[in-house]
Amino acid sequence: MSLAHPDAMRSTRPEPTRTAPPFRPDYTTPRMRRYLLFDATGFLYLLVGFVVLRAIWALSSGSEAWAALLRDFQNPLYVIFHALCFVSVIFVGVRFFRLFPKAQPPRVGPLKPPPGPVIFALLYTVWIGVTIVFAAILAGVWP
Amino acid sequence: MSETETKTFVVTRFDPDRHAEPTTQSYEVPVRSDWKVLDALNYIKDEIDPTLSHRWSCRMAVCGSCGMNVNGQPKLTCKDSLAQYGDSVRVEPLANFPVIRDLVVELEGFLEKFKQVKPWIIRAKEKAVTEGTYSQSPEELEAFRQFSMCINCMLCYAACPVVANEPDFLGPAAIAIGHRYNIDSRDEGAHERNQVFRGEGTVFSCSYANECSEVCPKHVDPAAAINQAKFMAVLDWAQSLVLPRGGEEK
Amino acid sequence: MAVKHLLLRLEPIIWLLFGQGILIGTILLTGWLLIVGLAVPLGWVNVEVLAYERAQTLGGNWIGRLLLFLLAALPLWKGAHHVRSLSLDYGGLKRDAVLAPLLYLVAAAGSVLALCAVLRLPEAA
Image 1 (cartoon, rainbow over the protein chains, first blue to last red):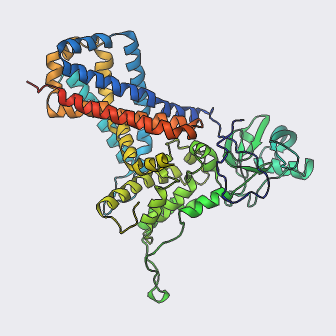
Image 2 (image 1 turned 45 degrees about the horizontal axis):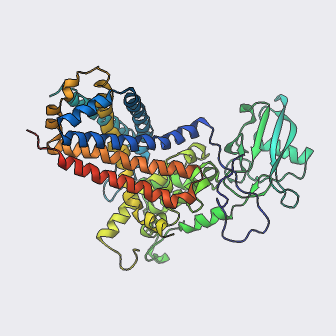
Image 3 (image 1 turned 30 degrees about the vertical axis):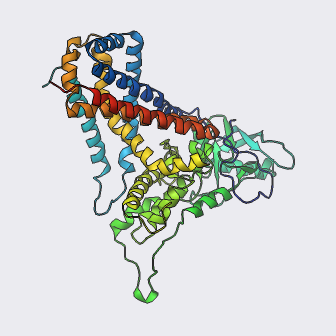
C-alpha cells in the first residue's frame, strides 16, 4: 500500500499516541488514471506550444525556413506527435468542459451566469464552430 | 428472509503498543444479502474479535462517523452494501489520515483546517435582537444550500490526491463550507475568507481530480465549491488591486 | 519558503493563464492540429494551402498575429501547470520549490518569444 505525504492531515498539536503514517488514495482506478492522464497531457501542451512557436519563427524568417518547417511536419514522428496532441486536446476539452459549468459562481455582483446546460451547449458550440471556421480558413476552403 | 454467504474480510490492524506498522487480519464472516459493510465489522467485533476498533454511530449515513476505505474506495460503511462485492472485501482506514488504531483515524487535522475558513456568519455589525431577523429569499438559500449538506465524513479528503501530497491544502470539505458562507447573503466575511483561500492552504492547489465529488455521499459536490471559490478568490484579488483595503493586503 | 510565498502571490495570475490555456488553447489548437499538424502533412489537403505567401497573408494581420500568439503561449501555461500538478501527485512537494518556478519561467519565456515572433512577422500584403 502506498503512503501519502507523512504530514498529510496531521494536526499541529502533539499526538497523544503514536500514529501510523497515512495511506495514499488508490491511483490505479480508471477514474484516477484518467485524472493522471489529464495532468500528463501537460507535457504535450508544453511541446506543442514550442512547436507552434517554431512555426511562427519560421514564418517570420522567410519562405525557405517555412518550406523546411512544412517538410519537417511530414516526418512520421511529427505526424504521430500531432496526432497525440489532437487526441489529448479532445480529451482535455471534453473533461474540462464537463467541469466548467459547475465552476461558475452563483452570482458576480448583479450578474448571474446562465444555467449549466446552457453554458455546456455554448462551450461546445464555440469549440466546434471555431474549429470548423479555423480549419476552413487554414485549408483554403473559406473564405 | 435474506440468504447468508461467507465473505472474507481483510481488515487493517494497527496497535501502536504492539505493531511497528499496520498489518492485515482476515476474518470469515457469514453475511446476509442485505448487510452493509458496517454490519460485517460489527459482527467481527461482537462475535469474532472484540479488539477490532472502528468508529460508527447513526447507521443511517447522517453522522459521518463510519468512513473507511473499502476495496480502495472511501465509503460510509453504514451505507455501503456488501452485495456489490465479491468473496473478499478489503477494509482499511480512510486514506490520507494518520491512523490511531485499526480503522480509527486522527481527525484533529481536519478540524484545524475547518476552523481556518471561519465557518460562521461574519457581520461587520451584528443586528440587535430587537431589530428582527435576517431575511433570505428561497433563491438566496438555494445558492448555497447544497454546500451546507456536508456531514464532515471526510471521504472527500480520503479521495483527494492533493490532500495526499500537499499537507497545507485546506481540502474539499473546508473549502466547500467556507464557500458556503461566502455566498450566503447574510454573510459579510467573504474578503476575510478569500485571504485564507489564497493563503498557505490555497484553493488553487486543487487540480480538478473531481474525486471529492465522486465519493461524496451527500452530493455536496465540493469540486464545484472549490472551483467557484477559485473564481471568486481571483475576483477578490483583482478588486483589492484596484481598491486596496487599508493595510490588509500583503 | 520565499519561493512558496512568491508562488502564492502569483497564483491568481497563474491560474487565469492556466485556465485560458485550457479553454482558449484547446478551442484554437483543435483546428490548427487538424490542418497544419495532420491534414496537410498527410496529404488530405493540398500543401499549397499553406504556401508561404498565403501563410504570410493569414498570419501577418493583427487577427492572425493575435491567434498565433495565443496558440503558442496559452498551451505553455496549461502545460507548465499540469506538469507541476503531475509532479505533486507523485510526492513532489520538496522538488516543487525548484520545479514550479522553472516550469512557469519556461512558460513565461516561451510567451515572450511568441510575442517577439509574431511582431517579427512581415505585414500581410
